[in-house]
Each structure stands twice: as C-alpha cells, then as structure tokens.
Length: 77
Image (cartoon, rainbow, N blue to C red; front, side):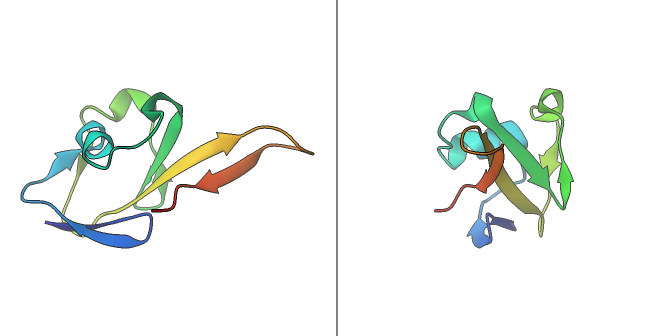
C-alpha cells in the first residue's frame, strides 16, 4: 500500500488506522497533532478506527501559539 504522508510517498504492507500510522511514523506528541486525511480534518476520537487506504494523503498538523496569533504548521520529515 502506498500513501502520501506530509507530501512524501511511503509504503506499508497493509492498510493502517490513523493511530497505527502515527505510531509507525514516530510522530512526536501524538496527543497534540491534528490529522488531515484526503483533505478533511479528522476527529481525534476516530483515529483508532479510521483506516488510511491505498493512495490516501495524510498531513500531520500542529497548532502553535505565540506571536500575533495562532499558526498552523505541517510536520516536515
């Protein structure tokens, strides 16, 4: 299975849930990350059941405070 994670193509043997993907990708502070799957922000409660299918596009998003307002940062490899 091939998917894009933060713009980079990665390959896995089987489909994964979002929670499994967060673990496999060794995402720092998984409790603080938002996940966009195929252009839609997921509810955290769905991470354990939402499957990322072949060809899926996933973005890990971090909301950072400070400065003049809140900023949205995409995790880069």
